[in-house]
Image (tube, rainbow, N blue to C red; front, side, top):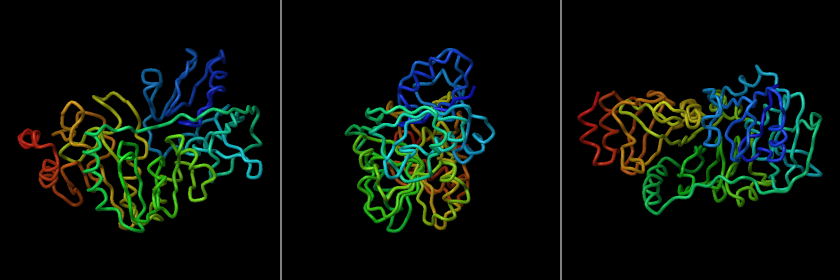
Length: 367
């Protein structure tokens, strides 16, 4: 039996307990949970995006968001369980998460928690004719917050000042998951085209906001409810390579765990141990090349918390984004352009934005 669970804030707390009580062999399609669950030992968990709650429990499937539709199309999903929103006049809505949940709606049957606190959002039509179990609930959605310390804020503000050199009126912005979501200040009138939207979108001067899912604070969920400026779409539509040609001047901003002097990016693993997922960063980085006048940026502090450099001579890790795709790297020490640069030019530019205490080491270890 294959059961798909609502992702992120749309995971149904009470229905998950009913699923866990099923005493049979189950494959649980279970990605990016924000809730803690007790899992049945007879249930095998398969995930395309890990989090700390399922590390060591789930089997990971490496996957670009742009291929999720193909991944789910080749499965026969028996049951989908998820939270949804309901409006007496407008009907059901996927709420915060059409990104994955739209594909789960192909299931033979759907169980839903209709949560009074789930924001009703504009997007694909929910197949309510497939609902075989419906329970009404009223509890706060799980939050996703990015608190930053004063030291972090100072560094991130410097990074943001460099990012803002690329953002001008009329451009479209994509911002991946990182603490930059808590500090980046965008002043011009823009649009948003992003896999994720959150608190960072609330105060934007944006004419249109298109995303795959919403995840943030309770204030964000209230802002999202019935917001006519926002449209949430299945993630495969957002990241379809052809879609980027319809989004001119895309500024794609993502982060990384480490970058090497070739311009290769690792953002999903540590020492080859999977800790998250490939997600959409590769899709958007490549998509910026398709977007007319688009640019891709990897922005990150120059060091991790213990002072080690995020820029290293050679990645000994899983590569998420290949060296030929990123246009610019940004740290608190400046901007390194990669477009059309030789290996030597790339190394020189990346060393210049590394933390000063690591630059001599990097120079000695150029390859």
